[in-house]
Image (cartoon, rainbow, N blue to C red; front, side):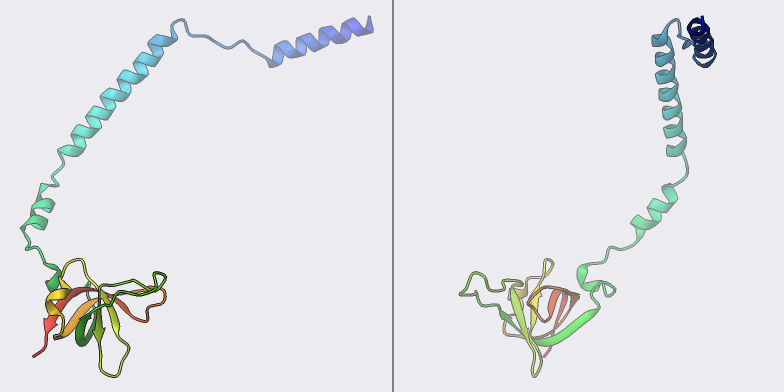
Amino acid sequence: MVNIDYMDQQTKLEEKITKPIVSLENPMRTILGVVIAALVLGTLTGYLLSTKSSGSKVSSLVAGKAKSAEQDTTTFRDFAEGVIKAKPQPSDPEENTEGTHLLIREGAVPVTLTSSVIDLSKYEGKKVKVFGETQAVPRVEWFMDVGKVEEIK
């Protein structure tokens, strides 16, 4: 009997702890309602955000003149003077191949140059002042991405 009393107490305890899950009569209807509500709220939010008056900000940005790379003095802060020469092709394939040109400076380290906005071959053999941005490149003492070139007479 002791064993039966213990079983009855255990069953009563389990009945208090566990409850049956309330099931919906039609779960598909609830899911469909949530999806429709999300679509309506999303559409309404998109419409409200698109009708805000942000057009004046865009027009003021478009109205300004576009700067060319040569006019941009904030990006190209670094400069150096010297004679531009084409960089010789290395005989050893493992040798440094960074840059397309060298800026030979009197009494100073040459600057390895590259540029995606200026054709440096037009200035080969000429004394110039180059403006650009110094980059950190392994095995090169000074590497510059050139954005502006001024020919020195």
